[in-house]
Length: 501
Image 1 (cartoon, rainbow, N blue to C red):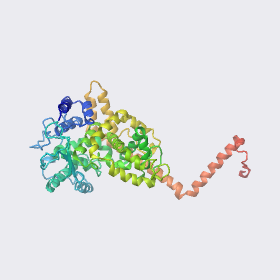
Image 2 (cartoon, rainbow, N blue to C red; image 1 turned 120 degrees about the horizontal axis):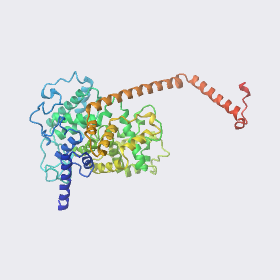
Image 3 (cartoon, one colour; image 1 turned 60 degrees about the vertical axis):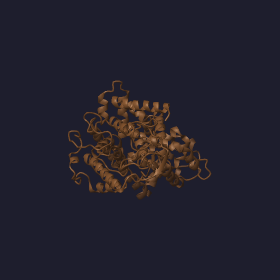
Image 4 (cartoon, helix red, strand yellow; image 1 turned 120 degrees about the vertical axis):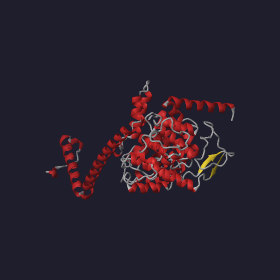
């Protein structure tokens, strides 16, 4: 390591420490999307606590809790006032709190945890790791020092006993959150986020509290009764690409066009950007194969909220634009987007995007690029474009969604020179967020019922009563023709309507 590199690392570590001590949210958000991010495991945990509001005196993860990732020696109810009392009891019964179907689904999902994390980056001279989270090029034993990766090996760092123990812990952590908030709807992919959090903290009470706060702040939009809002985020990806990279947007048109209202049969193949749904609802933790890469993406989520995942997805696509345009662009000799049927090209494009775009090696560059995209096109501007979209009638509004609400409150806090605690209370108010979530779910349910009734009426008219519909349409056409002939006969000089009388 050269003297200049060491000086730069020292300056960055000092900046991180200062931002943590002063609770400078703006500085921490900027660091999260800078090269290297929070750089060490200890700094990441401390930064997350500030960004999630868990460093506040009324939080269950106070400053005197462990931040080095080691499990707490005791589980004191006074230290963890908001943790459910059953944490201190080894025999916990969650049957009455969480439905049996949900428990079964959580068990099935957690049984597949850690499957994607099969590789990690480690230095050549590094000793074999013990039964713990694999250290990465961004997390070293020395606080803040970065070890440059020199080789990558496909190797399992956990024994089967360790994997089973972690899976049991993740299952318990998820059920604790669902027990605390019964109104939330569990979805497949939630366990991937819980896995990454637990691998960072390695403590059930701490992992549960962090997952709970992250869920309330950033994941509520994915825990609604339907996936309507989740698919709206995939729509925003194409909307953003249309503005920043039109050629790439054209190549991706078979997977959805934001300029048309064509949404046929509610099929998943006709949801705009369906290929990115797994990216969004799992914060890329399901598609990345390295723990350190997943944690870097989580840095962006914790700092900027749910909407920032849209920018990360766009950045991944932008980095792979040459291959995408080369294989599926309008000038390619196999696929001409102006002539080929979207339904024929889309499956091939969808398969390529879901398997060949998200790359762990590029995560750090992607986070930096996503930060630049956010600065050029703020979330509020993107939401405004979404409202103005011609296909908005087929989508849900985001004005009261969890992701947009968090961004609004954060912007009000950052633009307030006095940094009033009232804005922080609005950001980190769990009760407020849950009540707004319930209200939004009710509103979406009403919209869904109205849409269902309208579709049923339309089907009744156009399918079951097709002759009646055609008769009514014919009468309207003839009536319009009579009015035109009466008021302006010169328009239809050859039209003779005497037979009508």
